[in-house]
Length: 69
Image 1 (spheres, helix red, strand yellow):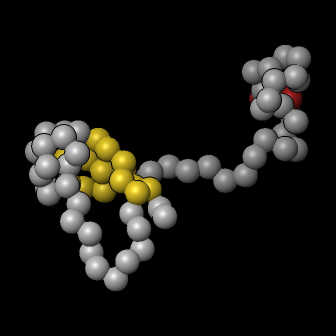
Image 2: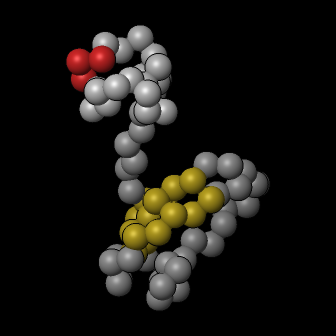
Image 3: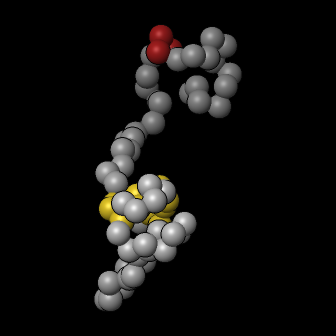
């Protein structure tokens, strides 16, 4: 199930909702004030991992931290 981030236009609260895939449209409400006046925010994402990167961009000088391969 995809997770989306929303913002309430009434109270300004940001919150995440896990949206299931169903035939009916779910009623989406703010978790703080129960308003239906919300907008879905555009989220950033990352693709890939750190394998194959040079160590020059790493903050780990020893190469032993879990993010170094």
